[in-house]
Amino acid sequence: MGMNMVSKATNSALHELQRHFPQMKVISLSGNMCTDKKPAAINTILGRGKSVLAEACLPATVLAQVLHTSASRLSRLAHAKNWVGSAMAGCPGMAGANAHAANIVAGIFAATGQDLAQVVDSSACLTQFEVGENDCLIATVTMPCLEVGTIGGGTRLPAQRACLDLMDLNVDCPTEHLSRLITGTVLAGELSLMAALDTDDLVSAHLLLNRAVVTPSSPTLPATANEVVEAAESQGLSRAATHLNGSLARSDASGRLEPPHPIM
Image (tube, rainbow, N blue to C red):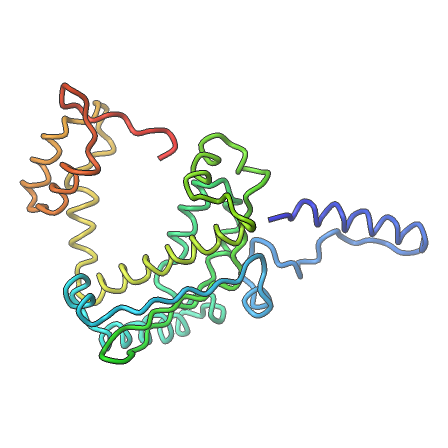
């Protein structure tokens, strides 16, 4: 996001000032008013990096058929969890008024070569759910200090550059486009988790989808695509099995899963 350029410019300016005012003593190049890699109210108030707002309107039919909930229930949950719960926990202002924005920010930062330490302040997020006309849900996330870059640093690594290229950043302001993509993904993640909490599906989904099929500690190569699907079906994961058998499970002529591509 240009922090090194700012540091170099500030350092040069201080040296020039010292040339004109020899009695001046520089205590430190940074005085923590930046405020970098730390949660701070000044970042959420004044902004830092990119300040982005994403909003979506979900009709009542989508809420009922896809998320199995309603706008009134999600709105009540958002107030109790994101506002009251975060305030009782002592979260700094609006920075912690969300469900799990940091999960999405950390994942995309790692994949695209961003500064991982800046997840601390970049994940500041205010999530709001309101009931709209015809019982639709107005879902909004506000991210006031999203620190992203598309040039230099970790973005030059081959895998991270490939991920950035997948995001179609060949536009006039690629950093703004990237910040919008991240914020939109955060909004989707907030809707997903909040709906899972409301329907009490969170723990059961973790137990089934995270541990039933995948065995990270296994020293052997992945099973065949058919074996993975059969394992999923044995655990009652018909939808997951169908998905694996379709777009996710890529196999060669022998039926074995292909090893994952290094940039995925």
